[in-house]
Image 1 (spheres, helix red, strand yellow):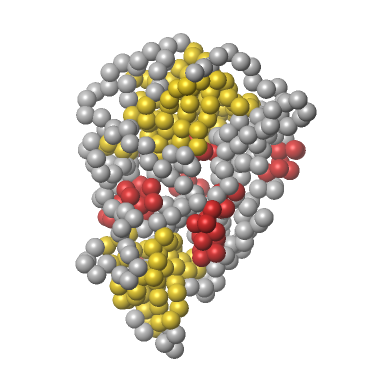
Image 2 (cartoon, chains in turn yellow, cyan):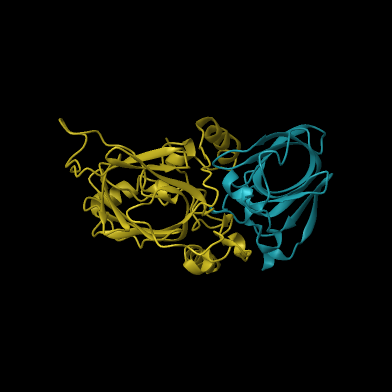
Amino acid sequence: MRKSIARSTVALLAALALSQIAMAQGRGGRPLPPGFVAEGVPKMPNPPGPAPTRDLSGAWVGPQNFVVGPIPALTPAGEARFKLNHRYLGFDVGKNDPIPASNDPFITCDPLGFPRNLMAHAISQRGGVLFGSAPNRIIIAYEQQRVWREIWMDGRALPKQVDVKGAPESRYYGHSVGRWDGDHTLVIDTTGVDDRAWLYEEGYPRSSSALIQERYTRVDQYNIQFTVTVDDPKFYTKPFQFMKANLYWMKDQMFAETFCIPSEGIQYRDSITAPSGIKVLQ
Amino acid sequence: MKSSLLVACAFGVGVLTVCDPALAHHGNAAYEDHWTEFKQVKVTKFAWANPHTLVFFEVKDPQGKVVEWVAETAAPQALRLIGWDNTAIAPGDVIDIFVYATKTGNPAGRLNRIFLANGTVLHDTQLGGETGGGYRPQ
């Protein structure tokens, strides 16, 4: 009974942590000081101007006000894959429960992959995302691991298959094409992701044949709202919205770098994870 | 909450344990729900690192043997919001440190807070409102 109450409480706290109400405050319930849209994210001094046409370029900070899921039922193949993924100490692990082993790829700084990388700064809400350009492409660069994605804007088709003869290889960040829907919404379709990466830290999988769609709507000069939907009939019984969140204009446009460095990951594993009784599965 | 009653109990020379809830963004099943205080211990290493920042320090056990402990706290991008940076602590610093120790008995745990010699207090990110402050400099 005590355990179930504790778990219910933890579940409630987790739900609150993911709610927009909770995110209106700083971490630990701290009220935001004047002049900040999120903890550590300064508000621009002037009211936002109108959104420019077909332009997301610049450095942004987020995700803020993020909501995940709900994640639908898995197919039998999805269930089988999900059972192979053992997340790192979840909130539902009670104080007196056995310590579960984990094979979260991030323990050893393996690539987060797409779309998990979009959640990399969900706790701090202040990760950097940079939209830039190159011929026929929009480039999206991420502070976490300094990785980038190429979004082809020249009308090419996505690969129909990957990792078969004559087809391209799967990639941790997939193959992406984009188009504008009106003047303010960039739609990106991605497939061909390397299925070794997880959908996110809970260990849900995504297959290399999943079609993942992002929609970035520039609401005004300083705000982007975005959603990510996943259509992966191999692993999930129906398409679903994986996440929605917003990005805010980075005031100083200073793009930070945040690395998970393998030697530091090993140091953490050897200094904390293993001495704490948490097994790391290979 | 029972664990917030701050029930103190002796643990050894210069070491005190006090009951208080520990929180982290992962579950905390690996750690005790009371903290242990180490007084006037020397920092041996400060790893400003992902996935979690680590503070290594030397502790003399009751037999006088020096044991190296390590306390994990949050990632740098979260610690910057509450006043830390990569110069916050340095090897050789003598500190008081409060740690939720691992249940295994190994010399490791989750940080609660650190008192530096100059009076500065460095908190873990999970301590809540009364410990706020420290926003990203402009």
